[in-house]
Image 1 (cartoon, one colour):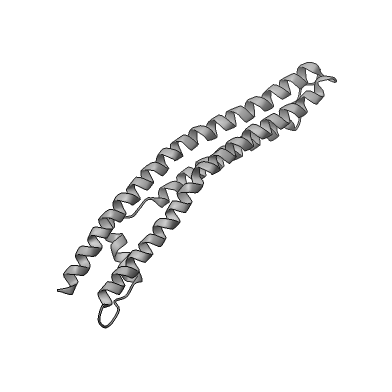
Image 2 (cartoon, rainbow, N blue to C red):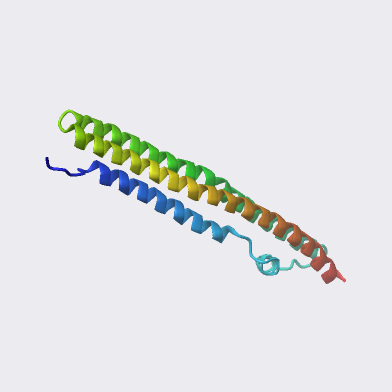
Length: 172
């Protein structure tokens, strides 16, 4: 009785490992979305928006800086909204591939019932384990998204106060 996994079990395992690696990579990229310190963000916005000459120049500069900040907040918000669906999709890929390869494994039951059942079981386990790992990483990422959103909210409030204060002081 020659016992071999065939191609299905390694394929199911590789798909699950690949999805888990992508989930972990996406989690590590979440850290780059954290806001910088208010002082460096303010300096960056000031560098991007040179002073306007003439009457109302400071007000135009402030409005330009606010517009840049709003654009940055919109970009960050868009990226953060993509995180949960990404983990849902990776979880579904693990489950679907494990299920499909399990069903293919049942085709071998007529020729080799024990080996076919074992292959089918291993494919199912690979898909379930991959889905569980991705779901666990996804829960961690969801908490990271919430923390990042709160940090950007605090940063934008502080920056708004700083913009009003710094530009009002430079008028005098």
